[in-house]
Length: 156
Image (cartoon, rainbow, N blue to C red; front, side, top):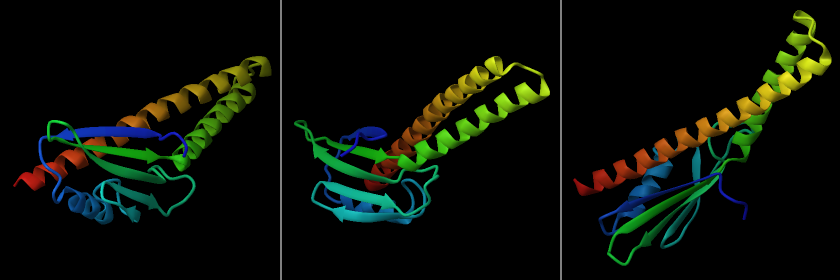
């Protein structure tokens, strides 16, 4: 299996009696990563899900939630997601921005191609890196908030 795009772990000071059921409910109702998630399989300590969507999605393609019990009786929830479509979207946006800058620089500002192409490539790389960091931060916040809210609701 390929390396996950993002892994988020949350440790709880509770037992996991009905926590797996709440996590499944959250995945199905769209609370985890938005609507469209389909549960592929459920085992005693693992829930696998995927998304049926386009190749240029801004959300992960598939993922899994794993519940583990520590020595101290705490429950750790680990969420791993894979985002192949997210990488395609970022690469396309970066290539379009870099190509546009190179074209505008060469045609609009009379830059030499030796100048406009490296500047466009540098913009494309910087934009791709910035979008990667943004996507990872957004997903980490979203997954952590979902897992913490699920455990908060369980404590009520």
